Length: 120
Image 1 (cartoon, rainbow, N blue to C red):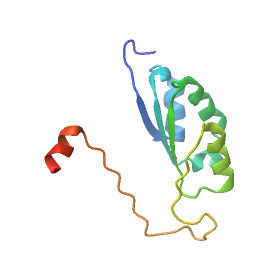
Image 2: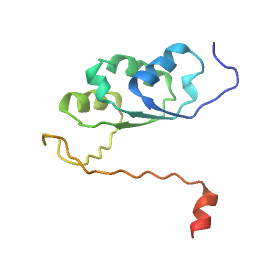
Image 3: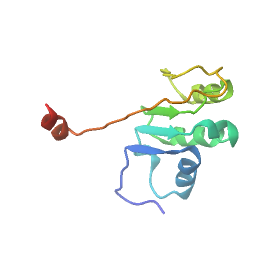
């Protein structure tokens, strides 16, 4: 049930949701150039690495992959590195820390050109 003429360039979701949407066939993943996966711990927890690998084969070949993990344990890191080309890794806190670091806040803001001009 692919939607004719509909193009998506950015996909943002958890690993399991991305897998469900891909399987549904509602749109062509070939137009996606940026895939943002959060909760990539599911790659290890639910063994979704093969499914995500297939999804990434279907997205635009010059894609960018952004992955977020709560732990970046070695198995998770290796699964993501296997899916990435020329990866850049940003890590906050120490993976070996138990319990995981707390009190870390991440503030992401995306503004269009008009919003940025108004603040200047």
